[in-house]
Length: 165
Image (cartoon, rainbow, N blue to C red; front, side):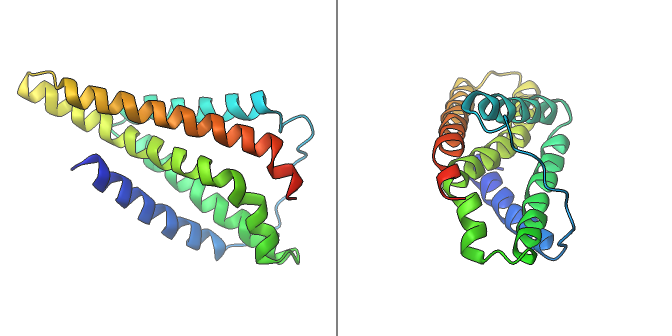
């Protein structure tokens, strides 16, 4: 399976999980964001989560990445439903997510897809007993894109999103 097909499949699954989460509003405790929305805090938190997903996804042949997919997108749906049930308008809820989500969501989807793609590509290389430098370069490029998107998401979430809430 090509990386593009994996990304498309992950994106479709993410949308389905998000919609499923919308069906389950919960009375969630509001977490204090004091001291947790600084650029470095957000960057380190998201970087650790993505790196863990890549490493564990590789070790577990993509299973951990699928769990990461489920938890993140189902939870986003639940949070959205909960915020909307608290008399927030759809526009208000979107303002909370969309600005930094433009960068963070693609970074998450690419991370999940790469966490599934890497182990299967490595297994293919081991079976053929040949090292595919092009595939390795492409994986490295995708990783760089994830890093850039994560940095942009942290910057937007810490400096711009608070102005929209």
